[in-house]
Image (cartoon, rainbow, N blue to C red; front, side, top):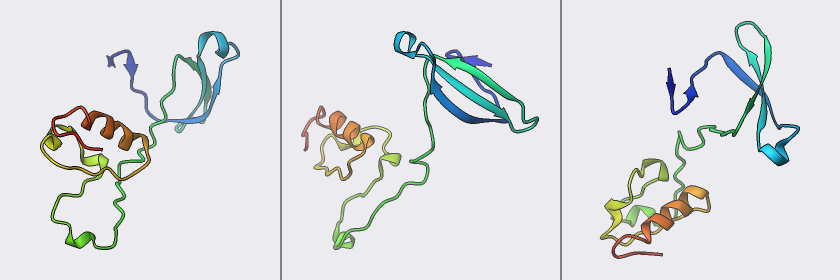
Amino acid sequence: MMFFRVIKRYHLEVTKVEPSKDYDTNGRWIVTLKSTQTEAISREEFDGVMICIGHHVFPNIPTFPGQQKFKGTILHTHSVKSCERFSDQKVVVVGIGILELMLLLIAVSLPNKFI
C-alpha cells in the first residue's frame, strides 16, 4: 500500500547510507539494503533519509532533589501531544534536546506564555 508515496517493506536491514555521487547537485542518498531472509544485497537511491531510532520510545525522566515535594505534573516530551493543556499554567522545560526546544517554541505562543 502506498500512502504519501511511502512504501512499507519488511525483512530488510540498512547496512549503509551515503550521499550519492551527485549529492551536491541533487541532494540524493544511496541506501544499501540486506535481506534478512535471503542475504541479498541491493542499493537504492532516495531523495531523503530519516533516521528513526526510537530514542523516545522509552522516556527517561531523571529525578531531582526535592522532586517529591512538587505538587504539579512532571511529563516527558514523549507524553506531550499538544501544548494547549499548558495555556493557563506556569511551566518549566528541562532539557537541551530538539524536542524540548520545539516544545518551548510552541508554548511561548500560547496565552500566559512562559520561558
